[in-house]
Image (cartoon, rainbow, N blue to C red):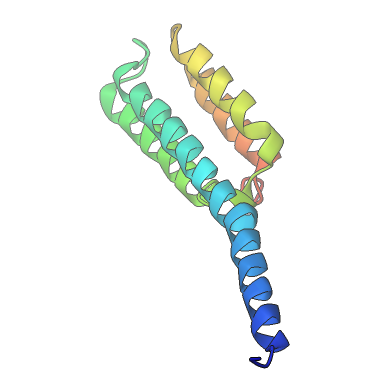
Length: 122
C-alpha cells in the first residue's frame, strides 16, 4: 500500500484556494472595472463631437483632453474608485450625452471624480 502524502494534499488545496482567491478577489473585479473604464472613456471621448456652440474648437479639445486625462489618472484601477459609484456615474454620463452638452457637464465630471476616486480630490 502506497504511503499517503498529506503535504501534497495540503499543497493542492492551498494552490486551489489561492487560485480561487486570486480569480474572484482580483481578476474578476479588475476585468469588470476595465469594461467600465473603457465604456466611460468612450463616452468622454464622444464629447469631442458634442461641442457647445459658444466654445471654440481648440478650447473644447483642450477641455476634453483634460477630462480624458482625469479619467486615466484617477480611475485606472479598480481599487482607486468607489465600486458602488461606477454604474450610476456611467449611466448619468450617458444620459447627459443624450442632450446638449455644456461646460457644466464637464464640471460635473470633475466634481464626481473628486468625490468618488482616491486621486480625484488631490
